[in-house]
Image (cartoon, rainbow, N blue to C red; front, side, top):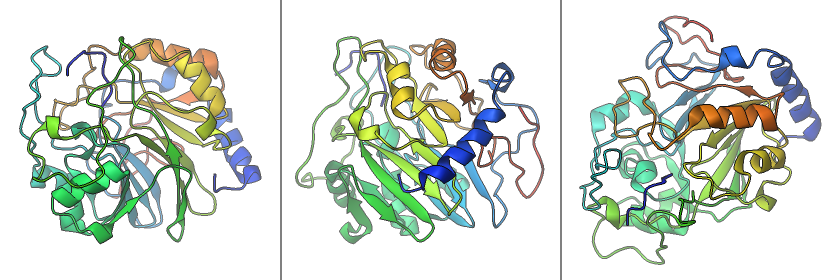
Length: 342
């Protein structure tokens, strides 16, 4: 969770550089026309990519569905999106956790791997249902492990990581990156805490879900990429990012200026990615069936301007919920219809 409110490198370098050059070449002089914060008319909803394709779909907040040759990886899949009062100044920490099976099944396909950045509700609360109904391998922190076990997920299905691991899933490579949670104006963050054993009772409310440390992931698909860097919160460890150099960077938008020179330092550490995709700027209590609405504490336009200034050759794509994107974050054609391009 990213908040301003006070509520309490597996791919060879030569291949990466070649692909990033192509992505950047398409961006020079054209970035302004590729930035859109609303759903484009004609974008295909819930399209399933064809076999042999590589595609990305934003699940809102920091969540992604990545499809690779008929295989699916999920990152922070928060789909049910129930109300807590967070966006209207009436936050209720005792809000009951909920998952809507029909909404979830409509979005996730048949995931093989689920990556979890941290354990706040807007990242993990749909993961227990997904784990128990799909058998997907869950990768996350020790706190994520203990929470999921308390929810009844098979412990053998969960892989605990800390950062620095590089995992080979036969054509999908996942590099685990030690990361940090977003800071608010008081230089603190929401719901800290870690677990070293499962809680006595299954978590029932959002206050039962501590942050439990934060991870980022770099996912590289196939021998030719692309590599995508995935963030779940808007802070980072500069040293932990050294050498990653992703093609695509899904970057969480900060809600405060507490982190020193957030965008310039992050983009420099990532080697000025070919494509930058801002995430975690939307109101995640509105349903995914509606166009994205801004979190009122976020200044998305200012963040995009900072990206352009810090990394002028990066192409910026502001995603929507309904579009299936290709491996370069251009609009891809699902099997049913081809949507308009940005």
